[in-house]
Length: 178
Image (cartoon, rainbow, N blue to C red):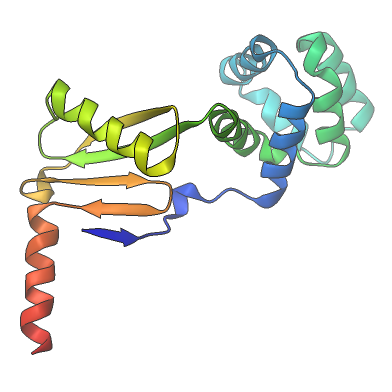
């Protein structure tokens, strides 16, 4: 059973998406982007410095020059100058999605009671590749005992609900609509 769904975890601010596309178009090496992510993860106070309006822009620029890889400094300075560093984590998420899109990689989420076999997983990946015209499908597996059985597969804005819980809910709706 396929239904359309929009979930909030898929939403990213449009400004973050725009910055992510710019980051991609700048052809900044992935290593520099990864290093920047690691720096923010290791020193989360840096994020607080950049979003703090009481710290002068000149001071923030000095920190960027001293701490970050050369290839990404200008991007960070522009984001800082236009007060968009607060979107940095969303920018990185949107960048990852855009890279996957450019490389024809689909990311999906499989929610199930128990993980599928290797054969089942490969069949789901093949289905997704064919359905969405992509070269590769990555499937993140999440466990949810509340489904009672079966699975729910989310890909882009589509939901394929073959869970026992979903089937019981649809049956209940049919019976109450009569």
